[in-house]
Amino acid sequence: MEKINYVCENCGNDELEVLKKKVHDKSFYYLVRCPKCGNVFEISDKLKLSQTKLIISRYDISESKVITIPKDVEYKVGDTLNIDGEELEITKIETDKTVKGAEGKDIKVIWTKSLSIPKKIGISINDKNRTYSVYLLVPNDYIFETERTYKINEGFFKIKKIKLENGKFANKAEAKDIKRIYGEVSRPYRNAKDLTEYLKED
Ligand SMILES: [Zn+2]
Image (cartoon, rainbow, N blue to C red; front, side):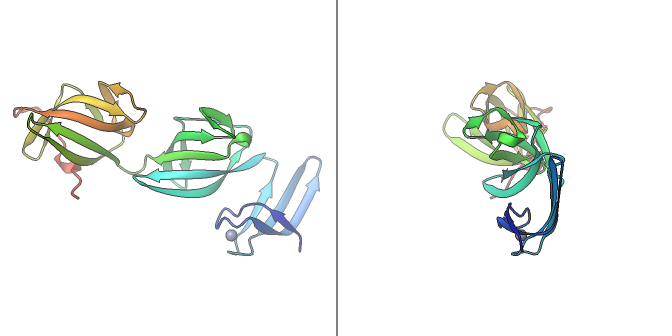
């Protein structure tokens, strides 16, 4: 049986058996079977597809898989992809080097973070004597602002600094872009935004 070197999307095995083959003009069609997991699928270059490695980060855990993407479509850092129903934001693209954007055919690895899970954010709250750290799991589009008062359980604090994932600081940002928040204990304030429901118990 004829074999080709192509990565099985299901198990990652890279030698597949060719069940059926059609070649005409400049396009081809293969029906292949993975001898390792039994997955049967089609490969066709009509859509000019290319395979790339996809890394998905969910908090501190990463998953790696192989996906098929169009060769002539450009991908950029910050774009979102929907893979198996999960929304992913591209955080890094590797060709032969790390780039901000590239066409599918040149991409070796796409690094992403999942937007389908709540964002984990660390908050350091200073009360002049010591600093407390808490972790929240908040919706990705939740907006935090400096100089606003927030509440966790019975404690109140005002945000002083918001550090972003890219290392910069902002006065206002969505949870998905935030790395860490720095605050100071403040007096109780009736219109404080209550974060208690997002508190992550360790
Ligand atoms: Zn397989």
